[in-house]
Length: 86
Image (cartoon, rainbow, N blue to C red; front, side, top):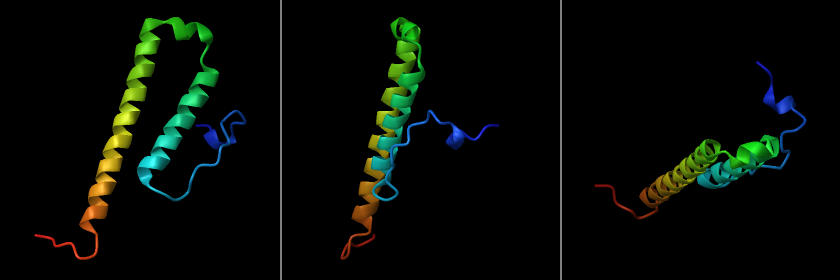
């Protein structure tokens, strides 16, 4: 198995090392989409099946970010000072 970090064509954008998980995930998904778009032959962009798969991946990525954001929001609300746990 090859080490993906050694690939020279991978985007070298600096990813946040701190901050909310949902935002780091969102940025990572954006970087992955950019990388995929750079490597995808333009002829595949016109293929309806390929486009449907790309749309599905993007949609599931957005769903993941929304779920992480909601989970982190609930966690913050539960850990607020003065909040009561019943």
